[in-house]
Amino acid sequence: MAFVLVALVYRLELYADGAMFSYAVAVQDVWAFHWHNISGRTSVFLLTLLPAEFYVGLSGDPWAGVFVYGLLFYLAPLAGLIGTFAADRSSGRIIFLYACCSTALLCPLIFGFPTEMWLGHAIFWPTLAVSHYANRTVVGTGIVLVMFLTLAFTHEGALALEFSIVAIFAMRGVRDASFLRAAAILIVVLAACAAVKIVIPPDEYYTEVFLRAALHFFDLKIFEVTIVALLFGTMVLFYVLLAVVSRLTPERAHLYAAAIVVGLLSIYWFWFDRSIHASSRYYMRTALVIVTPMLGALAALLAIYGDSRLAWSVPGAEHVVTWLKRRHALPLASVFMLLTLIHVVETGKFISAWTHYSAAVAALATSNQSDPALGDTRFVSSNRIPADLNRLSWFSTTPYLSILLADFEPKRLVIDPNGNYFWLSCATATANERAQRAVPPGTRQLISIYSCLHRS
Image 1 (cartoon, rainbow, N blue to C red):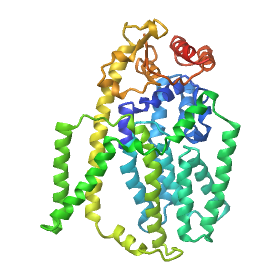
Image 2: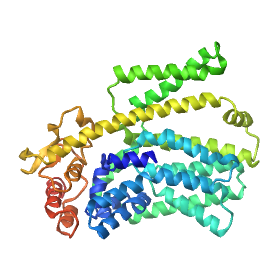
Image 3: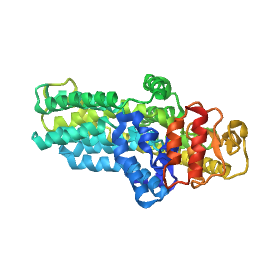
């Protein structure tokens, strides 16, 4: 619920790629603008963008549609947890418990950036629970199939989550009916994904872009950022201090160790830290693809063990279950609170920077400043924004953001002169300009001029 409240209050649906998605909703052209290029992510389109675009048509209010888009997008984790709770039949609802932990610890890494893995993570957990506990009937199998399809079409990385679900079922035995059902459904889903990619291919402009993005999806360099170092450093430091302090006071060692870490974090934030976890939120989607299945495997191990369905004796399984359930509970709770503290502070820093950056873009979009060298007298360079604020920029969507922040009536289109990625072709932008839409035609003309300067 905090995700929803914070996102809507600070308009985080406009951040980075969200600016272009929000603009596409406002001008009622989401599929034509971009989503036909990423047909493998149709679930996100159907669940968030299409309803928002439809609401613009009903209300005639572009801002209402943008709000609906943000609301539906950021509601996904809550909806996923509700679905997981309803489907989980494990002892103590252990899958739901791990879903909560995963949501609290992983989702803040990408919170604010509109990556489709936000929905992928939200749908993974109810899919895992449904796959385990749905009745082996036509209706039950149909529900599992729908969940698998919905998850698969959130993001290409979600296929890794689906493979992990099937692999997890192997702990129940390769002849288990649920395993065989999940494996068969996965084959159907893979065929469906391939068919959609063939029938609805991306525009030629995007082919190389998507290939380059796919090749770098699992590049370990994306984890060389401050937030990752801070999270891992905090965990390591806590357990080192715990080992030392426990020799003096075993009962309260976790409290003293946590207090020391909080003190050191405070010193770091107040005197040394100058970082902003902003653009790196996009790349942290890879962390969700890697870590979410690990947490899912632990949850499933506990659930299967509790249901007495473990197919064979796994060396050390009983020790792992005992450790996860009973031992080290207080230290784990302390680590959880420390990592949550880091997420709260880093999110607060991000929101503060985003607020100031948004104000700067809005001021520039409504000003009389101009940089005709960019192609039109109504264009102005984002380089006029101070460099410290411009850390929040996302060069390819700055023009769309300037329109949104100027309440769809900008005097100037704010453009990053270093931009080399252009969302719309001239034909697509021109067609939208000529159509009847809720956004003023003069505003849409600016996007048409900008697009035709860069793409035929």
